Amino acid sequence: MKSNRTTLRIVIGLFLTVALVFFLFPVLWMFLTSFKTQDQIFASPPVIIPPRDQWNLDNYIGALTGSGGLQAVRDSLIVSISTALISVGVGSLAAYSLARYRLGGDQFSFWILSTRMFPPVASAIPLFLIFRQLKWIDTYWALILCNTIFNLPFAIWLLKGFIEDLPVELEESALIDGTSVFGAFWRITLPLISPGLVTALLFTFVFTWNEFMFALLMTRRAVRPLTVMIQSLAGGHEILWAQIAASGVIAIIPGILLVIFLQRYIVRGLTMGALKY
Image 1 (cartoon, rainbow, N blue to C red):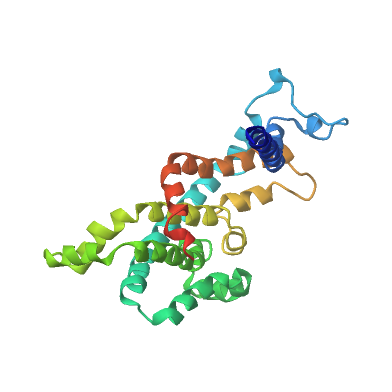
Image 2: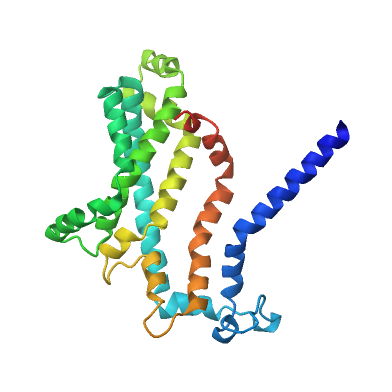
């Protein structure tokens, strides 16, 4: 019996290892490509790992300086952080009203969720016309508002599950002690749902960081997110594969760092109220 369990664990371990290698291979290939030259990229037979003495940061420097990469990283950070903060801030207030006061009933809650299912491409032209009248094209506000519209329902529903899992008696005790409703929300509810706040913050940040359609449609020169900058490296006469790979590695760094530093909160967030819906 014990030998059967050991064999099963070995088989499961091998299967998970193969699956991990399979799914991480594109990331590894992109990382290795970011250190290759154009000749090595098109060499036959293919160069898997470039020679050790040729590893340098030329492609990263070229991606950040020659193509406006630093501006792209800055613009993406401004839009992503702003969208995440607004979505979580407004979403926590809306989720509290839905969970504690049943604002609008269950139908209103499902209507909010349905806006998340709405295809963004269907609203691209109307939003573009509105922002053109407001003279917001090629501004941070246009991208922040577009991304907030589609990330806010996700944040509301995620946080609503956390708040509903909290005993309402905790807030009632604070109200009896003389705290206002907002004071109970600020001092009691928010600290207790901190895993949910961090999880919602991370997901809304990543969704906005990876967004491409609105970034391409609503920007010109003044604002140029990283996703738009990367696609501009594929020109009509030449495709800078090495710089594209380097830009791709740069693009995944913020998400990896956030997951590493916020892992404790994310695990708690994904195993608590978030699984209710």
